[in-house]
Image (cartoon, rainbow, N blue to C red; front, top):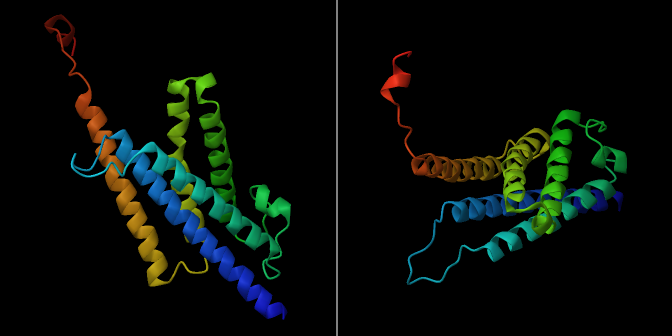
Length: 194
């Protein structure tokens, strides 16, 4: 009976973690697409919008909760709350676990900043929202470092595909910002010293 329960909790923990990661990837992709005004043609419905971004983020958070709870109740891992909530307290791959915990706390901070956006202002909210890329990076490293499925072709495909997609849109975002900047004019008087 105990081995069946271990199998169920471990499978739920793995499935919850991968589902949360895929949904996080989609939320980051939609967020980056929105920030670069990447849209479908006008004759198509607007699929990329902030409601989709918020929905994907909410779903990712729910599955992250499933992942954390399944790991906590799993009799094989035998994690206490301190190992799940305190970075470097884990007896199992402490550094990789700590990265996941830090990603969790950054996610909470971004969620709180979204709730307080009217009070803190759009400028500060936007600055804090950039930390989402850090969450994605930390979650990726956490999954690669702690995951029991990391060596499988499908898990590596999920991680690699996510990195490529997010990296591509991030490059587009960075290049679109630098392309919009006004060129600096060098006056002859200031270039003499150079």
